[in-house]
Image 1 (cartoon, one colour):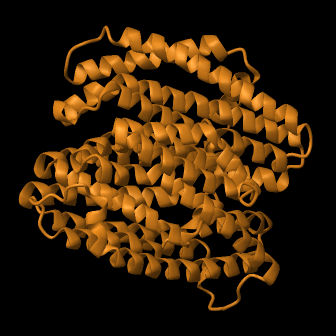
Image 2 (tube, helix red, strand yellow):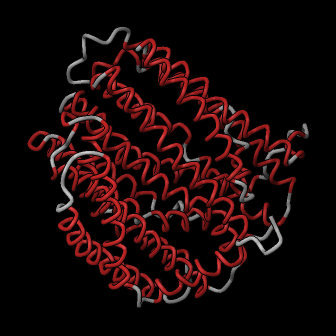
Length: 518
C-alpha cells in the first residue's frame, strides 16, 4: 500500500473515530450534568487538569522516540526499532510509577486548588485517588502503539479505542442513570481506559513479531544521547504547554469558583473535541511529513507542502472557530440549559485561544518531524512566567475573563513569532528570511479574512433565531455555506489554495476504488 493510501485510510478511520468519540463524550457529559451537577463537573475537570500537570513526568519522551523511529522505519532497521521500543517501555513504566506516587502525594493539599471545597460531595480524596490511578496506569501499555503511528497504521489504534469507548460510554451512562454513583463511574473509566492500550499493544506485537524477541539491547550511546538531549528540551516545552493550557481550570477553581470551573469545562470540552478532530487529521499525515523530511532533499517542495498544509489548518480552525461562535449558545441551551452559558466576551477570548493554538499545528508537526526541539527550549520558560504573571494579575480584576485573556496574550507575545522563527531558521537552509516573512504575511492576511468573513457570517446567522434542534441545524448549515463561500472568494486565487485543491483532487482520484473492485 503506497503512502497516499495509508494517509487516506488513516484519515477516514481517525475522522470517524474522533467524531464518534466526540458524540459519546457529549452524551456522557449531558447525563453527568443532569445526574450529578456543577460541583461534580468542576471537580472532575479540576482533578483531570492536576493530573495533566503530572504528565510532565513523561518529559516529552514519547515525542522524542517517535522522531527517532522515522528513519529506522523508513530504512527497515528492525534492530534499532527494537532497541528504541525497549527503551520506550523502560522509561514509560518508570513514568507511570512516578505519576502514581506524585499524584497520591498531592492528596493532603487538595484544599489549595479549590476556593471553596463543596461539602455535599463525599470522599473527595478517594475520588482524587481514583483519578490518579486512571492516569498513572495508562503509561504501562501505551508504548507499542507508537509503532502503529510511525508505520502509518494509526487507523488500527483509532478503531480499537472507538469500540472500547462505545462500550465505556454506555456503561458510564447506565451507572449514572441507575445509581448516580460517581465512584462506580470512575471505576468504569479506569477499566475502559486501560483496555485499548492493552489491545493496541497486542495488535502491534502480532503485526511486528520482532517486538517479542527477548533481546535486551538498547540504542547505542550516540542515539541515546540525541534522544535524551531532545527529552531535556521537550520537558521544558511540555511544562509550558501544561501551564498555558491545563492550568486555567486550576486557577479558575482556586481564584473564582468551582461552579464557574464546571461551566467553563463544558465550553473547554467542546473546543478540545473540535480541535481534537482537526488535529487528528494532521496526526494522520504526520508520519508522511516525517517521511518527507527524512527522504526529500528538495527544500522548495517541502516548503510548498508546508504552506499548503498551513492554509488547510487556517481553513479548518477558522471555520471551526466561527461555527462555535455561532453555535455555542444554542447548543449549550439545548444540551445543558441557560444556567451553563458564559458571556459573549468570554466566548470570544476562548475562541481566540482556540484559533491561535490551532494555527500552530502544522509548525509543530514539521518541527517534530525535523527534531527541532532544542533550539527554542528557553521560549517555554518565558511562556510559563508570562502566563502565570498575567493570569494572577488579571484574574483578580476580571475573573475568568482575565485568566483567558492572559493565555491569549501569552500566545501572541511568545510562541506566535518564536515557533516559525525556529522552524525556518533551523529547518531550511535557503531563503529563510524570505520564507519567514511570507509566512507572517499570509498569517495576517488569512486572519483578516477570517475576521471579515466571520463577522458577516455571524450577523446573518443571528437572523435564524429561536430555540431547539432545528434552529441549531439551520444556523450550522448557513454558517458552513456562507463562511466557506466567502473564504473561497477571498483566497481561492492564492497558490496555497490552488495547491490544496489540486492535492485533494489527486488524493480522491488515487484512493477511489477502481471499477470492478469492491
